[in-house]
Length: 195
Image (cartoon, rainbow, N blue to C red):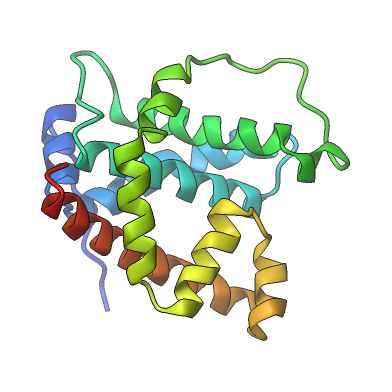
């Protein structure tokens, strides 16, 4: 089966509009354009390919959530791939500083510093937190636990696989499915609450 070529967007505004419409091809294009350089950056900053995948997914989810809630608006002269890279970089830098990495890796000597104050402030707004809580409550028990373990408690995929008596690759796939369901519930709840 031949795969359709990824679209090439004439402008970042076209690209942003496609992401706002939840165009699956735009998501694929964003992944293809952004992930390879981010993976390279993580591997050069004390991470593995799996670390890069996890940080990229978290950062991308934050970015798409901010597009959907209107908290991120495209600025003239700003490249979307650069913005996504910065979101993902914030996630990885937080991971490096967290307790689970302190014993195995030190912070790199030089890191491109970015201003994360606005991103952090936006993500912590009470309305969004409440909608996320309501959305989590709508997930089936196993999905809710998986999302909370991975994204909130930062439990590794390997440990989650052991807890659920599943293969790590199956857990990775299930985590993606559960995140998509959560995103759907979030949209409905956010629209209902007028966010």
